[in-house]
Amino acid sequence: MFVFDAHLDLSLNAIEYNRDLRRSARDIRESEEGMTDLKGRGRGTVAFPDMREVGIGLCVATQLAGCMKPAGPVGSWNSPEQAHAMTQAQLAWYRAMEDAGELRQVRDWSEVEAHLKAWSTDPSHAPIGYILSLEGADSLRTLADLEHSWEQGLRALGPAHYGKGRYALGHDQDGPLSEQGRELLREMDRLGLILDATHLCDQTFWQSLDLFQGPVWASHHNCRALVDDPRQLADNQIKALAERGAVIGLAFDVWMVVPGWERGVTTHEDKPEANLEALADHVDHYCQRLGTSANVGIGSDLDGGYGSEQTPAGLDFISDLRDFRAILERRGYGHDDLEGIFHKNFLHFLKMAWT
Image (cartoon, rainbow, N blue to C red; front, top):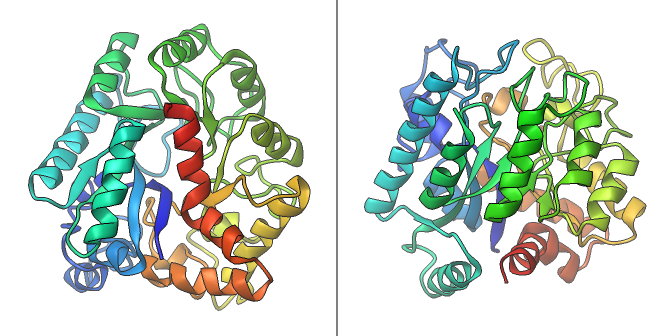
């Protein structure tokens, strides 16, 4: 089993949570016993050994540090300068993991092909591949930072996160792109970056698709028809993304899986239906609306500022993705569908975008 995960906040966990991801997630949990400083303490699901166990050989790994107002649940700072400094600390950690042989950055299709060959030869020891993405643009002090980030290997960018930003409004807001946001999209086009439509408010979503001419994906999203919240994709947005050739990554944050889950309040005992079967309903919805599974992938967002207290029941560690695949197989998804959802759809997207 090979898995492409389109959204993991690895550096957030390493730097802000002070987690050594070379240890197993179980070991990290034990080391955090009794800690209450951050949400998800003692309940982490993601670490390199666990990723290897389930075959996550390639992922989109984020830099996450914004200064949008009101502050988001994670990665929030009081100025663009502070946020920029944090993204550079996160990048330094990725470089350190490259030096340690744990990670390998891929920046174009030839590097993807070389990485896949190395992984297939020795998946137990080959570095895990990662594509660098910036979640929320407010750490960019000016657009000059964007070109420098491109040179550092940044290949995807989501202009918004939570709240009101200088470039775009998050899903919890509503309003148009700022002029800075329009300039950002034009510069992304020039450089060849992938636009991540995740977290954009509805008006900004449509404006961005009209203005931006390059490749678009939605790294971690579920369906608004099943959970009525602006963080989710409406059916017309799903269709528009598919028409652009986008792949949409399924998010495993449980409040996005079933309606009525209140973060920090609801528990799995309160909502036993908040499980992997409910997440599979979102796969069904995407495929039924589009008539194909070709636009669906995995963008788990596990440990994205939460832990197993906020994952679907049945997923305690990221390695439990194998059980999700078994659920889809029982629902009648064939081998080609499953291979597409778990890695080939995003790989095809990258090949089209980068060749």
